[in-house]
Picture 1 (spheres, rainbow, N blue to C red):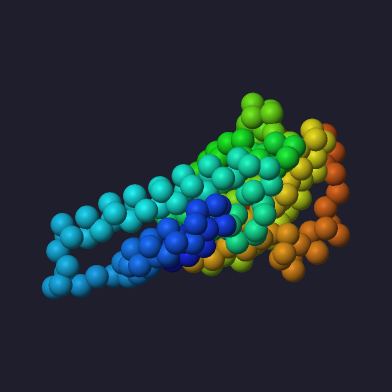
Picture 2: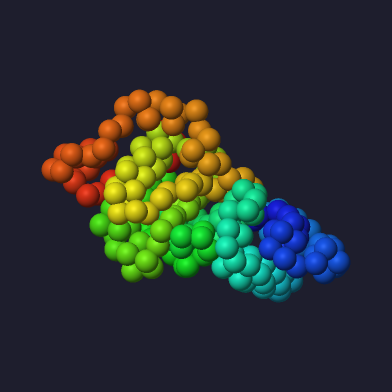
Length: 229
């Protein structure tokens, strides 16, 4: 699981006082250590594990509630990249299959809504442009931050991740919706597709899609993303 003591930093950034986050830090540190490490049944019973899991889940939900509340202030969600990264890691990092999600934002980059749009297998998720557009219009969004998890624990974007990002950027941009970022997350790390060296190749190869043409070998209006090409 995520190193939960880092949630203290998220909550501090989001607006909670350092005194209160300092009080939470020992519990969060213990939670982070407990969730990601295999325990010996000789020392910790199944019931104790269940209780610790429930406690950890409550801490995560509390942190998410604080961050999301503050994210509705102008520009707050994007004020610090690490806050965005940790928020998506808490949301998606522990999933055992790939999930493609989005944070829809308004014109002042305030959070409108977080949505998990698609779920796939352990190494693949199909992303349908039609459904992405429907979601954006339903939220009246002006901007988006996309994210998906890699259950393998390897957060480096693949070539298809980059191509998908550019594809969404072009098509949503035509509707006036800016794609601000696309993050690949695991329980321990987050990497921006925009910062990947592979993106340079994609920028040279991609052009705005022609109606009726195929994208990534898929039917028009539909694209797919696969981890670790």
